[in-house]
Length: 302
Image 1 (cartoon, helix red, strand yellow):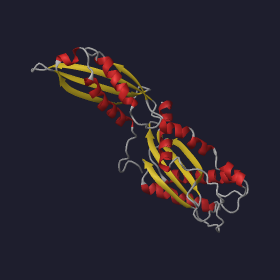
Image 2: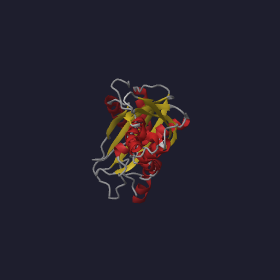
Image 3: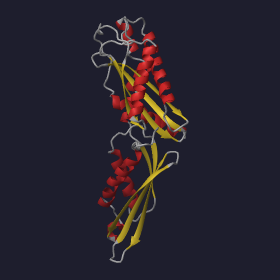
Image 4: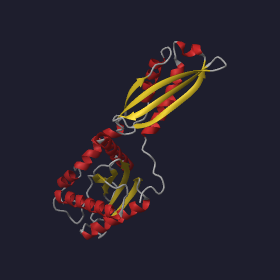
């Protein structure tokens, strides 16, 4: 179970970060010298099982907490982020990714916060805790950069500015999360008996098609069991049914892809050839759909 939750965690963090974009980097130009303002501009986008109203409330809470903690900003400097939530057997998994952007729209720092809470709902108390942790992280980052000249995003010395822009969350985003986004799932394929070379041909064709699938994040490792059933028909042909059962590495069933068609007995008696290739493409597509995160349904979060 822990392995599955960890895979879900990395995928959701990667999804949230992908929404913000991995191309952002520290801006080495001299920061602006505009007069400080009392309220930071915050914009949090909803993702997964988060409602737009909840993301808006979190934006306001972060801005209010920043004002309460006397965290000023300069013209153009703002916080952009994503709040993501997904249900797991252990509870609601929450991911918050917030980028600090300077007046030129360049990311100079990133904070990431995630965790599983036992309930499957998201309330204002949860949002307040997320806001408080986010502001605390920003203040800690600011303090680590040395004395500032009136902005949490503007350390007094350029060397300190550059070091502060490469915090732990920035390293995760640039390295491990970047690798996760390029990862592909791994499949352990086992075939039941089939006429001729059907078992070998179908397995080889499916392996080839699965290798062509796009990266969908660190989806982990999966079991695929292929079974072939042959039934007779009155017209002399046979009915061919192929069932691909897909399960997570811990044995949790994910679904089944079923394919049927008619064929002449001679077509499957020895070499399956194009028949196996024709079945593998749609089978791989069906398996891919099982691995995608479930879409948010209206009313399934509160």
